[in-house]
Length: 329
Ligand code: SF4
Ligand code: SF4
Image 1 (tube, helix red, strand yellow):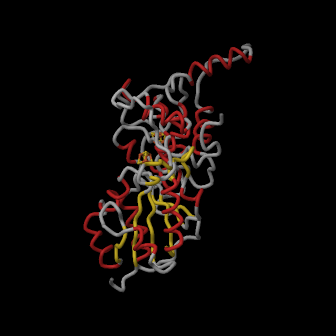
Image 2 (image 1 turned 135 degrees about the horizontal axis):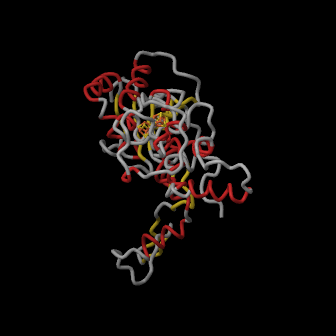
Image 3 (image 1 turned 90 degrees about the horizontal axis):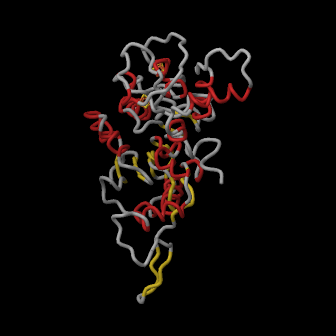
């Protein structure tokens, strides 16, 4: 073991993209190696859980925790790494807000098991076996981590010191954070979002905005948008208005709408609610003079119904971290 501060990275319910984002800082990864002992990362290193348990409390300088909390094991590792780390960072959208795994909060655990283990046409399961935390076998009891009813964020189960948004975080933003630590610069107060801006993606997007109203929404395959004009004003649901800046408006730059991966801007509690409110102010339902409330609602519904998947569009990355947290049954 070296005398360098220890750096760890853990994946809970995650896809591995966050690990790639760390490698994406390219040659600067050598600076990470020069300044830290990278000692725990199940994707890259063979350090065992018992090695972490044997460490003194707060023995790890920084842990980058990516992935949402879906299982008992995810929560156990979050608690262990909280205890062993001086700074615990929720790294990436899954850990910060639940992200894509969090959309499963629109359905129950029972629904998931039915779809995956019983109704799936590629599964041969005549006895209808679904996972249970404990299974008795002649040799004893087999135990696996329980699968939670709902996906949670890291800060739902432990106190996280900082949050780095993104799906995955952008390499230049990751480097900004690592560089600040390496140079001993003071980090913002605990609980802050770091490695991102504070305003909305629209602020850093160079497309022309003309305050145009929308009569209908389009999916990306239905049109080739004008490359100069605001996508939202062309009827493509672009989440830039309800999304934290910091990526450099990457998606609009390549003629694709922002889908919201940096989470809500500073001061916004619920990204989806912010987007719905913004859409309310740009929908054009024509002249409503003399129309009954019912007719007005009908026209508004006709425009809104052209958005195919409202929950998956407005809460793609943030459902567990939102006010609703999931489907209310
Ligand atoms: S809504 Fe999208 S395209 Fe329009 S300005 Fe904002 S980020 Fe750019
Ligand atoms: S434009 Fe939106 S979806 Fe694309 S990287 Fe930036 S925050 Fe994420």
